[in-house]
Image 1 (cartoon, helix red, strand yellow):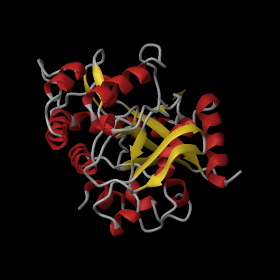
Image 2 (cartoon, rainbow, N blue to C red):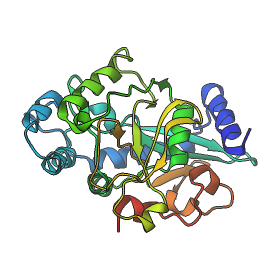
Image 3 (tube, rainbow, N blue to C red):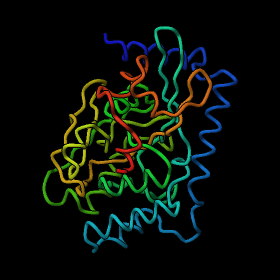
Image 4 (tube, rainbow, N blue to C red):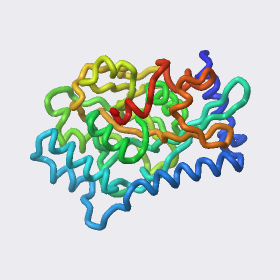
Amino acid sequence: MNKPSFYLIICGLLLAGYGCSGTHKGQKCMTSIRAGFSERIPEREQGAPAGSVFMEQTRTLSYAERQLAAVREFIQGNIPSRLRELEPLSFISEEGDILILLVTRDYLAVGTEGDFVRMPLSLPSANTIAKEYNMYLPTPEIVNAIYEQAKVRLEPQPMEPGPEMRSGDYYLRHNRLIEGQMSGSPEGLIAGHKKDVVISLRMSGQPDRVPIYGWHRKAGDPIQPLSLVHGATYEDYSHGLRLVSPVACLNGEPVPLGNLFDDPVWGSFLSNEPGLDPQELSWQE
């Protein structure tokens, strides 16, 4: 068993029984990060379209126009309340030090708690939202950790490939397939139901491509290995955007997450690509 997986399991046991993030300092650090994220997103406006209404409003738009409309809704705070909450993703080192990342519970969606649609987003759209929310995109390693620690693991629901993969109808149908696996509004991390838009050093050599990864069938077994086959403006029903806070908690103290990617202890937990700058790649600066 490799080191990251081993320590993810140990930290999961601590979370379940002994409070891996349960120290007073740790709770205070997480509360501060969560509050900063929530304050960054405007309150949802009365009269903002619900998910099904948004999809109907954008039904005849081009792909590019629909992306612009979705970005506008996200920037205006038209998201379910559950997405304003960040969930802990915990790691423990050989020395017993504890690192906690804060990530969105689910993939970004337009609409209300009772009527929302998880919205596939192109790389430019993902970059815009990440910067506006002051968040990062995940790496494949972080996506793996999210799946390993998810409270709710859903089965991937592939649909018939073809031109309709990018249609609003497919987005709605896939959203219903996902919701059909859940009962109510589960607490904690939800994973397994989308491919993630991720960041990778490979973007430097292929800036016109979108990196995608995930859709796990089980831990360590994603349907989609890291791929940059699609152009940057591509998205389809299987894609989702999950965000990661740029501030983490290390032994209860806030630390810039970007500083840890080349750290000799924590770097391998976060990425297998030394030298990766999460802010530069997430915001395309």
